[in-house]
Image (cartoon, rainbow, N blue to C red; front, side, top):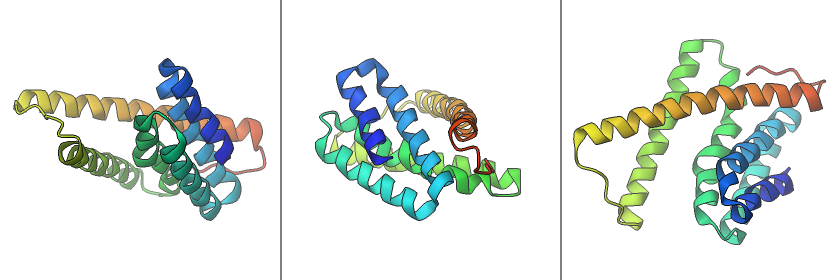
Length: 160
């Protein structure tokens, strides 16, 4: 699965318009690994993919996005799906999003000297846009994972 993730992430270096698609597809492979072989093996796949992507891919933004968000969230998604209370699921998902946003802003400001807009309205609009995009992504990755598992791994019970 790690090889499939790397091939998928490599597509974004060759065809930049496939950047988001390759990230989602790589995340899907991680989620499928959790469902098929368990968390320990999936964590190994995630770690191997993250290291290989970071050191070998020419486009570092793709590897950072995979490491911080798409890969890690896909690793956690089946665990979130096992939560019985839907409110706990929602709280956990959006807490994760907020933590990733804070980490990203910190690193962008500290290491890349990125200027964050100081106007409150712009910050709120960017934050709301991220929440909307995350909500769409969460819905799509959940549906895609269930579809992927039902088509290729029919013997696995999905809880997400």
